[in-house]
Length: 190
Image (tube, rainbow, N blue to C red):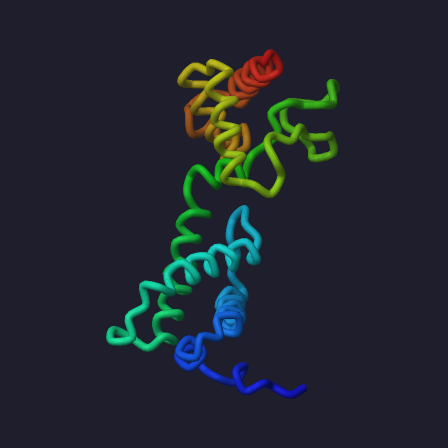
């Protein structure tokens, strides 16, 4: 496979001659290389790559050749955006959605804690964790939960089991089960 002359060029040369398509393709490959082995809660690597590429494209007009080489500018921008995406993915809002549990048990004979074999009700749109958070928050507010129910809802949607929540709040697992049932009933009444 033969490489074209522009493909072998560095970021500085590509930017100087105005070959933005090759420049962006090269930046995208660099980005994918930097993302190898990294995981982002609720986001695909390709989504992170796209976010980085949008940031890079929008920042090109701010580049100042007197301050740094283009290759340094691209490297720093990619590294900083990866850090931003980590912060965004690890935010409490995102983790509440990514680790969300089923609110409504669709198998009427099932126990309070699902064994994973029943069908879950999907809230929002799968694959849109940040938008789903807003959707779930709106539902939670409309359910008119009291402070204790909100606390349990938040812990449960963060991935905690009934036993763990009970230990944190100093009550029995049965009491948490009872409160979770009340939360589900409020949800079903919406």
